[in-house]
Image (cartoon, rainbow, N blue to C red; front, side):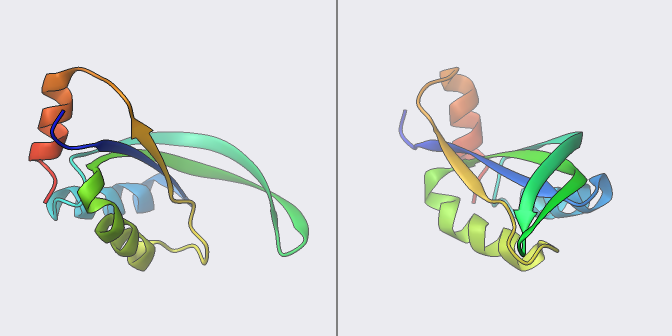
Length: 106
C-alpha cells in the first residue's frame, strides 16, 4: 500500500451540519469519503457537568498525508469549541478501495 490511510471520527450537533461540512471536505479533497450516521447518544463531561446530547457521527476516510490539513480545516468549520477529531490508522483493507481513497484526497 503506497500511502497510509486513516479513518477519522467526528461528532456534530445535527445531520444538516454534518452533511454541509462533509460535502465541503469531500469537494475540497481533504477526504475521499464521509459516512454520516444520523443518530448517536453521547454522554460526556463538559465544564464540570455530565451532559447528554443526540449527535451525528461521521466517519471520514483520508490519506495520512492529508491529516494535518484535514484537522485544521475541520476545526475551522466545526461549531463545537472542542470538536471530537480522532484518527484511527487502517492497517489493512481491500487494496483497490485503499488506493481509491488515496487517489481522491488532495
